[in-house]
Length: 321
Image 1 (cartoon, rainbow, N blue to C red):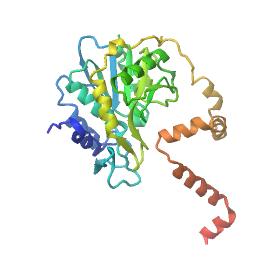
Image 2: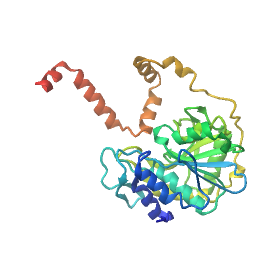
Image 3: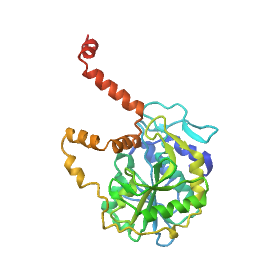
Image 4: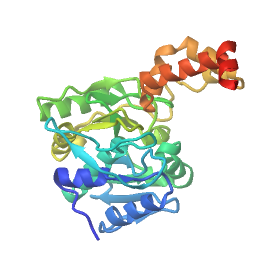
């Protein structure tokens, strides 16, 4: 069976698949949605890829795995404001707009014949396993690629310039992409943002000049309260079908690491106290990373309460009695 991915019905169908990395349903999803595409290739790790056009210069990136304890089908609904969410969300579940939205956008770009090298990565939620495999085992795939654009960012406005690698794309590239998108839709407010954490394009930053991550409209990722603004996602797809990627500014030299984030990390490595010190030194960044991982303020406060109760001798005596 081959699914029709066009329109909201196709997007909601993709979101109905809860697909943890390396699960049977993830493999079934790839067989149903990706393998029937004419010309698609599967590498030894299971990443799917397709080149459209002669010598493409841009990598379009997403990942097929989602955060879920169990794989299977899940019921998804959409309200009158165009917001998709789980109908019966429970702990251990997520909508999977991270990164079902990216998968949907790329499948529709392929259907429209938009030029580029399309990479559907496996294992992003487990530490960018698929893109790391490509970087280590098949870096030649990225020869002559100028830019890697991932559809895998929460919110509505971000063109990411920095990930865990450090700087992964130039301000000039991010500004040119943001400007091009904003020109294509007057509702957009895209702008360069340096608060990225990581996604698959981070793995390519030492090879590919410009590597970014683009907001696609999801929020509350990795938990049962995750949402997707379908209106924004649809508008972004329309813009991507018109975007002239050849006009984006390519400026960064991937052999030069700017704003290096790994060197100073060594001073914190080795002990739990060092980790706590790092969080104390950079509380805003720690909070942003927790949010990126789907931890809500309520989750955090409940964990704080549980730790305080566990440290209270009276409470421990009461619960042990």
